[in-house]
Image (tube, rainbow, N blue to C red):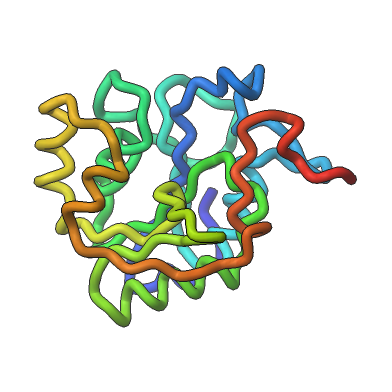
Length: 187
């Protein structure tokens, strides 16, 4: 969904939606909170800052925005990130997993600003946990990430531990990872 955002230096935002949603019971991208699908909610937040928001997912979705398919057949976060980095037209791409429906513009601003200030990948962190599905990734990672994918090394945390990155502490509510309907807060 193209938004009215500033497009910060041409940086695009990508929503990772290629998972199986096996714990959720149906496609998490289409799950709703407060009557709005996770996908539309995340897109709305990202569109406030980025001129282009693109869904990375194999298979069609009932969504009006731009979509690109995963580059590899393997279902893992690294596949979606490699796909986004390959499609990106600037030195950084912003990534959000589709199961983070409570992200905020403030959280996006903080992670993006830190990445630009430090010149390296920056990831969200809450309660000591790094959220690899929410961050601003440097396209400089692309060659080694492609190599990892093609070698069958899909563990994103292991890959990132071999490369420099920074983290930004965020409110845990902003990074609430919703894998099951029971993970949604009441109301």
